[in-house]
Image (cartoon, rainbow, N blue to C red):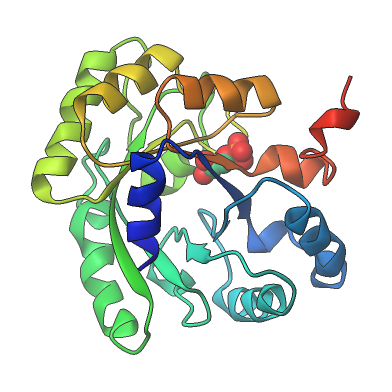
Amino acid sequence: MLYNQILSAKNNNQKLLAVLLDPDKIVLDELAVLADKINNSPATHVFVGGSIVEANIIDELIVRLKHKIELPIFLFPGNPSQISDKADAILFLTLLSGRNPDYLIEHQVNAVPVLKKTKLEVISTGYILIESGTQTAVERVSKTNPLDREDPDYAVQTALAGEFIGNKLVYLEAGSGAKNAVPLEMIRKVSDNIQVPVIVGGGIRTKKAIDDAYDSGADLVVIGTAFENDPDFFNFSSHA
Ligand code: 1GP
């Protein structure tokens, strides 16, 4: 089970790294090059998804990726239309920071008939959006407010609520392309206070920022925009 691999990595203090591919921003004809870059990177997972994506591209993208890449492919869906049986697992998200019932339960209920037709491993994930300096796509699409970045205790409270509800992962999200990533103190407090693995993403665009997130307690860091903008992003040794 892919979730168990994440748990055992956490228990062995092995840090994980996911490359997030947004199907709307991928040119399929350039995928072979991107796949090579991912294979030569420290990535341990590939996430596929975005706030708004046309579903028919996702199947094709994953099928092509699977020809080139052996890493597990997780769906990171903005809504049930993004479910593809070609992936290995799905982050079954609940937007814990928001108060929009569509993202707390409506989409999840609607996803079930689609999921029943797949063999996807379903991983319950508490998704917590943190204020990042500017409005992000998640805020816009979900019509919810993020949590105050200056209030780590409330983030802990929210993450613990997710854990008590039964979430198997907690994802601290600043939003794709965020101006400011999740504050390190918040990552530290959340990871110190919950048992389940912590994913951190949004606005992380340097190796130092990745390492700082790990040092603060992130178990898995997600990189989207930095890799989109520079497919050599993971070639750290060549950076100044
Ligand atoms: C967004 O956490 C991911 O959902 C990744 O964000 O695109 O800013 O790397 P970036």
